Structure formats: C-alpha cells, structure tokens
Picture 1 (cartoon, rainbow, N blue to C red):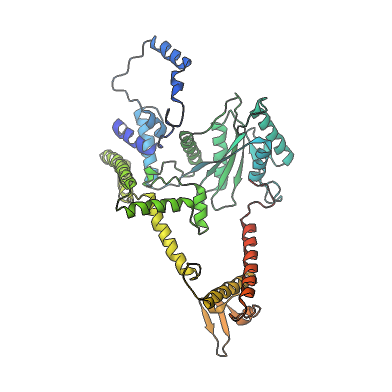
Picture 2 (picture 1 turned 120 degrees about the vertical axis):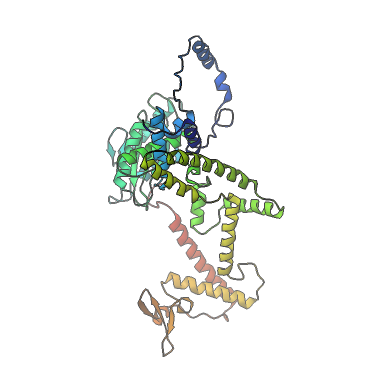
Length: 478
C-alpha cells in the first residue's frame, strides 16, 4: 500500500502553497452580475434536470486549492506531488520568476519591443535570435515590421477606434548560474504548450548575471479572444515553467513567498532599482511615515499581529505534514520530515514592512549624515567652511574627471623620506606626480570664482550621469 498524506493535511498544505486569491467575483476582480446572466441560469436549470452520479464511498476528491497547488488525480498522486514540492522548498531550490513587463499599443510599439528584445541595430555581434510561434527565427528588421503590422491589424479587427493593447510582454527568469540553453529550451516549450492558440515571439538574454527569456504574446488568439493574465494565471505559468526546467535536469521550484517563510512584500521592481542606486524610494518614505505615526501614538503596527497569525497557520500546516511523514515506514519520508523540521525551525519572525523600512531608512540616514558635508545637513557654518567644502568637492570632481588620485584622502597613503606622497593601489605604487595635473586651489580665491568652477564641474558630471543612465541609446526607447 502506497503512503499518502491525509486529505486534511493536503488541504492545509494547499492553503500554504496556493497564491492568495484576490480576484474574487464582486471584489474588484470581476463582475458579480455575470453569474446571473441568462446563459448561466439556463445552464443551471438544465443541469438540475439530470440526476447526479452517486458518489463513491470514501473516494478522495481534491479541493480547488489542492488542484491549484499540487494538481488533481487520486490521493496518492496528489500526495506524491505535494511531498516533492515541500522537499524542494525545504532544500531551498531556486525559484522561477514569471513577470508581466508591459503592454504594447499599435504596430510601432510592437516593432519597438521586437527590436528591443532582439537587440536589433546593436551590431551583428550583439543581435539575438527572435523565435516565433511558427518555429521560425527572425533576424531581419523588415520581417519584424511585417509581423508587427499583422498583429496590429488582427487585433484591431476592422475597428479603427479600438485602443486596446496589441501585445503583452513577459519575462521568464532563473537565478545566476543556470544553463542559459536549458532556460531557453524550457521557455520555448512552455510557450508552445501554454499559448498554442496565440502568436508569440521569444528571445534569450544573457547580458545580466541571470539568464532570462523575453516573451511577447499577441493579445488576441486565433479564435478572436483577448486575455489578461490574472494572479492565478501567473502562478500556473510559474509552475509550468518550473516543470519544463525539471524535465531538462534543472532544479526549479514555483511556490508563494509564504510557503518559503518569507513576508510577501509585493514591492514594485522600480523601488528595488532605486535602492540599488543608493536612493530612498517613495515607497520607503511612505512606510517610514506610517511607522512614525504608530511610534508617536505609542501603538504597535497591527500588521505585525496579522503576519504573526499567518505565520502560525503556515507553521501548523508544516507541523501536521511532518508528523505524518515521520510516522511513515519509508526512510525517505522520514528524512524529508527531518528536513522540513529544520526548515520550519529556521523561519524568521515576521516583521511589518513599515518596521523593516524604518530601520533601513534610519541606517541610510545615519550613514549619509556622516558622509555628507555640514552644509548639506543643514547645519550652521561660517563662510570659510562653505568655501572649504566647495573646494573639496571641486578638487574631488576634477581628480575623478582626469583619472587622478588624491593621496591625502585615500587609505593606504605613505610618505616618502623626501616628503613626497605615494599611493599603493592593488600592489601598484603610484607617484605623487599623478596628481600634479590638478591645479592647487586655496580658499583665498573669490567666492564667485569658486562657485562658477564648482557649477561647471557639477554640470559636466550631471550630463555624464544622464548619458550613462539612458538605456539603449542607439536602439528604440521603451
């Protein structure tokens, strides 16, 4: 007799491994009146005229959440998939990422997307293959233009005033170190199965540390139906993509954040990019203000108790599975139970986003206040300090622009016997003559001259930063 988890345990684990359902009818995700339409009522009336088949005594029927998390079929098969998912989660197998990146309106916008993901116009050594749903590979701009025009004309459907999106773009990604060719093969196989009734194009990118595939899908399928993927759809896409990767020998998992013991931050990628630049995004400022309000009122953020309650439910579901697996006669199941127990014990305590953000912003402010000059912190300083600060910034900017070093401000500076300074960088000794190009400046110069020079250097640095931040300067702008 094969081992299987009980139906109650499967239902509990399904609540952990299925995504949070927000798109409920009548709750912003749909129209509750749709169920009362004439077609639906007629279907219910016809169904009530036929007797239902008698239920088999003791037969297992997977719930909707269980099917979503682990699939359907008999209890042993569902239990086997659930145990495999928990085992991968306990080992912290890499998680796949499937994300909608945007929508394209019109043939021109679609063509710009094709050119972007194929790197068209960036040189023969940088241009990428654009795979299509027809099994072809496009490298020519004329073919991309014709395909974009066909998608747009089919989407319009003789409706010249239609303003809906022509296509939808997605990214399928894996962490660094994954074989890019296997990622591409899995993504193409996923697209052929999941979007068999739609036109799509795909291109593999390895310009970053993690391999990812850009997938652009025509909004209207061959039957004229348009689609907008919901959260449940994206979760299913992740599961399918992870399955395709496992079929090719790549360990991959697709689970919600709560199943991995993480708080679902649901932060936009723009906030992460702003933090990578050393800046504070608006989201962090809002959360910091929320934390300040509760702190000034002497109250505790109620989100903490909600997260603690959710974490308790997750731990209880894991504990129930561990108990059943530990009583199994199989040594493999007992080993999985021990792995799950270590995973549960290592779960961090939940922390509200406002508290976490307030700590991060406070640390950034403390670090920035030490690095910034007194004038930037708003402190009262005399005119000599202002001039000294301006001259320091001017000298640093001039040295950076000319590739020079300032030994007096660099760690590892040594002074020779004759009084000349020398700088050792990565074992290479550089003479003080490297900084001789920088003209000596003194605070005795007129303030207007210092301000003019400082303004010129800042404008040059700002222009350089703007040029470096511009994406795909020689390609289309998205």
